[in-house]
Image (tube, rainbow, N blue to C red; front, side):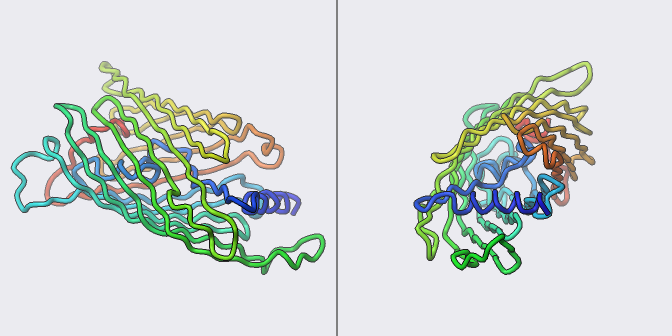
Length: 315
C-alpha cells in the first residue's frame, strides 16, 4: 500500500503540476527502434506491405497502481493507379495509417487516437525522405471514486476532457541509416474546465547499420532524444546485434533512469516479436526495478513475398 500511495502521489503531481500548463508527457517506449512509426508519423509505409503492431508496457512492478501502456498501430502504402510503371523501391508513394494508445496510472488515464498520412520521396538511387502527420484526439480522465486520501479533500474531483491533437514529422532513410524529427501535441487548446494546456514535445531519432559480412549480420547503434519546454531532456542510446535477420539482442541506456535489455526474433520476415526489460537506476529502484515491454508486429502482403525494408530499422 505504501508503494501504491507513493505512485498515486507522483501521478497526481504530474497531472496537476502547473495551473497554467499541463506538461503531460507522451507515451514512452524502451524499444523505440522497433516502434518508430508511433513516435514519428513520417515513418509509416516504409515498406511495400501492410503492417499491424500490438504493444504492451507495464512499468515499475511492485506498485499497485503501476503505469501501463496499451498500443495498436496500422500503416500501409497506397497505390494511386491500378498499374504502377516502376517497382515499389523506385517510385514515390503515399501511405496511410492509424494509432491508438491508452496510458493508465492508477486513477489517471490518457487515450490517444490518431489517423496518419505520409508521403515518401526518392531523393536519389538509395536515399529517401518522407513527411507525415498525425491528426486525432486525446482524452484525459481522473477517476477519484476509488482514491483514498489521509484527509477528505473536496477539491479533488473526477475529471474528463477531450481535446484535438496533432503531430508532424520528417524521416530520412536509406539501406544504411535513418534519422527523423517529430513534434507532438501541436494544438495548445485548454483542457475543458481547467486552465491547463498540452505542451509540445519533440522527438529526435537516428540509427546506422554496420554490416558484419562474415556473419551475414548487422550491428545497429541508434539514439532517441525526447524533450519539451517544461520537461527535462531524456536520452536513450541503444546498440542492437541482428543475426541474419532472424533474431536480435540489444542493450540501451536511458539517462538517469534505466539500463534496458532487448531481445526479439523474426519469423520469415512476416511476424516480429520484441521484448524489453528495464532495470531502474533512479531513486525509484528502492521501490521497484522491473519494467516489461513487448511488441508483436505482423506484415501482411498477399500474393507475393515481402520486400526487405530499405530503412535499417530491423537490420
